[in-house]
Image 1 (tube, protein in one colour):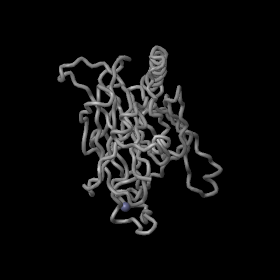
Image 2 (tube, rainbow, N blue to C red):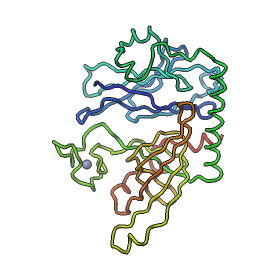
Image 3 (tube, rainbow, N blue to C red):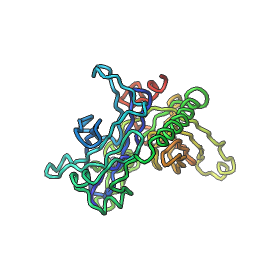
Image 4 (cartoon, rainbow, N blue to C red):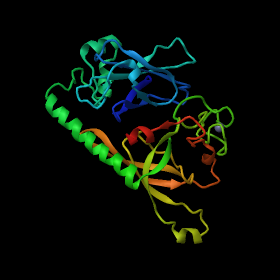
Length: 317
Ligand SMILES: [Zn+2]
């Protein structure tokens, strides 16, 4: 299977901010470095304009500034914007850019027969990504609008509860699953990191190890340490359940950093709360505390010192 970017999440948050996240299908051990372009259209399929290029993360936020002279309200249900993500291999300029299917602000995939023909998606690919060429959501626009509002109200309640009552500030470190192999510790046949203390890849075998930290809030229930395990001389492992907003999408092997005490948790299992096929809420059912000696504590996550993607500010509005 060839490489194919797939938009996994789109959320307007506040009137002027939008979060977009994607995955890459068809990755293999020698895929190498990838970069992304993001484009947006206010006209379904025509006139895509560049939002960002040279993106090395698998997510971004777009802030609509008033300087454009346009009054923007992304939360208006009549607002029509379509996004697509293009993938390219910076080390191989002969490869064409591969575009994701376009997705609108509500997360519906927008594709018609004409688009399919133009970007050259095969019928197999359409099947594979579960998209019918005529899956426009035009059947009952009023119902669709109501669902959008209900979804948004539910999501807002989750965010407000985290912000004002139960949340603590965290950095989400999303683990890389492609890129440049670490030149210092990667085994050339198994592609595994041979050195758990490597501070180039932090044991992931990918240079950098993790994407740009995302600052948000989470509700952490740490279970007490089991004393019987300790008395047997085993390493004490603290477990936690962690409640998160619906974005960014978190996966096993990602790391959650508590910003006030730098305690770090390795994500083991994530439960997704879905409403009408859209992610409303995520709960990390199982996370284990990373021992203080772990190389994971070297991963930069402090928003005062490095570039991060910070959700706390816009969420206050
Ligand atoms: Zn390494």
